[in-house]
Amino acid sequence: MKKIIVRLAVIAALTLIPFQKLFAETYIGVAPGYSTKNESMTLGAWMSHDFSKAFRVNLGIDYVFRNQHTDAFLINLDFNFPLKLTTGDKIDIYPIVGLTYACWSHHPYPDGDDVTTRENKFGINLGAGVGYKVSSHLRLKLDARYSLVKHNNTTIISLGIGYAF
Image (cartoon, rainbow, N blue to C red; front, side):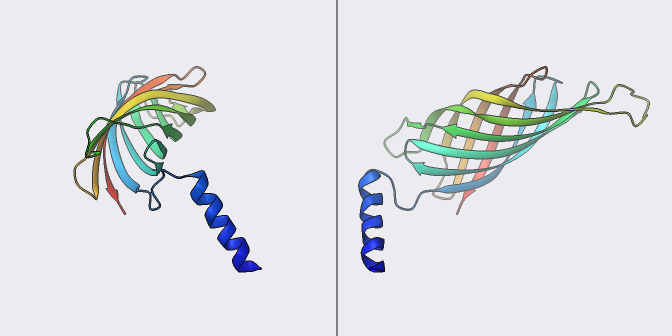
């Protein structure tokens, strides 16, 4: 009985996703960038998983360095829908739609007083990106993402490099 259930589950999965690769690609990487809110550099880490050739989930963490008495920590869950531009699947462009959790810290006293105001809010990410598959294990990406967070909207432009495993 157990074998029949397992076989039926495998057949159902294969019929529901007929064009999906059985062994999807997973990347992990880093992405330095720039934030427009406080005109500062960012440093991010990301992991993406291609569930199919047309759907990718990207989990990222960005730190926005302090400038203009403001810094931030962002956690992003983005969904990408890649469109392949070349026949060898080397270059793709993709829209970015997702969620963000932003923790913006405001330091009103530049003389070093330890008074910080933090704003923790959820928001929405919208943007676009382009990816280039350098080899079977190396991928470059350029993203522009606008984060809509109440009182703390920002655009983050980043250049990432990732390794497939």
